[in-house]
Amino acid sequence: MTTALVRRPGLARVRTNRPLLYLLCLGFLGVVVLLALLAPWLSPHDPNAVDLGNALAGPSAAHPLGADGSGRDTASRLITGARTSLLGPLGVVAFSTVAGVVVGVAAGWRGGWLDSVLSRTTELVFAFPGLLLAILIVSIYGEGLIAPVVALGVAYLPYVSRLTRSLVLAERERPYVEAYQVQGHSAVQICLRHVLPNIAPVVLAQSTINFGYALIDLAGLSFLGLGVPALTPDWGRMVFDGESAIQAGYPLSAILPCVAIVLTVVAFNVVGERWADQVARRDR
Amino acid sequence: MTFLRFTLRRLAEMAATLLAASFLIFGAMYLAPGNPASFLLSGRSASPEALKAINDQYHLNDPFWEQYLRWLGQVLHGDFGRSIEYRTPVNTLLAARLPSTLLLVAMALVLVVVLGLALGWIGAVRGGATDSTILVGTTFAVGTPSFVAAVLLQGLFSVKLGWFPSSGSGAGLGSMLWHLTLPALALALYLIGMLARVTRSAMLEVMGHEHVTVTRSRGVPERAVIRRHVFRNTLGTVLTMGGLIVSTLLICTVLVETAFSVNGIGQLLDLSTTTKDFPVVQAISLIIVGIFMLVNFVVDLLLPLVDPRVSLGTRGASA
Image (tube, rainbow over the protein chains, first blue to last red):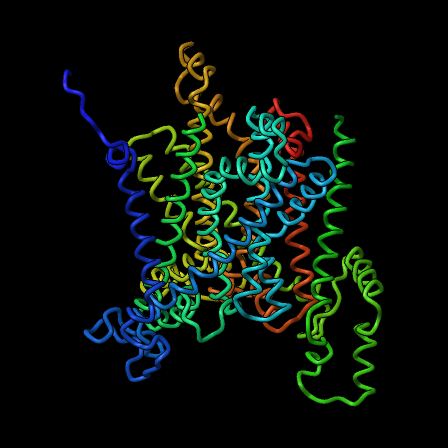
């Protein structure tokens, strides 16, 4: 070859390094987020408008995805439900990521008694499955979205903090940290400006995977009637409402939220694992 | 570390963690807004004498430490107190519901272990299209919450096809097995996917090791190589997931039993959460946490037997 091809590295990566499945999942997540953001303008009907004459109706021009057992428009409920179904996990992931990184950096950087206290606490939280912790909190404070989100945030915290701790332990040994220490930078400054950006990709990949699991747990709570308030459209709640529709032989209004949950969780898992793989390859 | 010293140390650790867990569970319930006495009276106004009788019976006016220590003492004697909703001992409630939950979890566990290991094995050994199919299948299994699986299985196999009953737990072992097949499948699906993925990647990793190449070059039959040198090596990895698998199965019974109206312990946890029946919620939570720790303890004891490279107690240190 004599002619040197000038390739733009960004485009080359799009062409070679991104399998179809990953792109599909990323696109799907984009669509879901967009639907959630624009829900009030996109949903064709009021998601809570009951029309018993229209109960369990199949797809029609007015109701493209049919109606549920109370005659509420399924499409509108799916679109509006995307809001709570994504907002809850977002809260869980934001809480567990921020708090987990703080705890993990503190434990990894300081070590000593702080590290052992935090590891003990981590072990204790690990013994509680996320859903159990959320149910405990709900049994105390009653139904709602805030209490389960905080409970799940606490339950997911150890996954982030343990990962951060091990990353910080590895990072602390690298020469650049010592170089900054010699130059007189404070520990807080080194952590915030140099260590944190270096470990951020791995933590974010973990948090992306956590998002899917948080969505599963929160949808499960709503399915039990312990999550969002009864009238708020939510995918988990829709599955519960759909159970009676299935028994009546009209499964559409139950299957659609099921599909929405599964596809969203799968998409988050695929994207998160892909990011984790990319980071692992970079480090090797 | 000797076996005895390790066992004693781990037992002490377990007792400490359980104590902390019990304190958390009891303390959280104690802080709950609302007075259990008002739930007992369910909105009716009571004479001061009746109120006092209730407060005395359930020791509601004692200081926190006294209440906690009394509860802890009772729990240590295997007594979880009285249910506020049903007015019967929690133990009686649990005992009545134990068989269906036990059978459900056992069936799901068998499904998880058999199908999870088999799918992971086949995927790793066959490769190609089989592997891709299994990968896609397990990706979806891992993304399917147990209640979604429950509702879909119910819709397909009991409402549409009528092969299985859609609710209840049946009487007698045969009928129970029949009633609990779909719930067990729904409960197991996610973990089957997870175990298959873990087994597959662990086996693929071991297959890349030199000892496998050497064994093959010595002319050992492929089946024996896979069974004795690859799969055998991954058992340790699989075993460390034991605690997670069992605790996930236990907590997800809440969803699956509710979906299929199986009157087991999971359904009881859901009902008691709604009615704020604290003694029941406390008992079930403590049992789930305790079982998780117990399984992890047993796993730690078994690990050196399965994988001689691991000496007792090194798992906790490396984690």
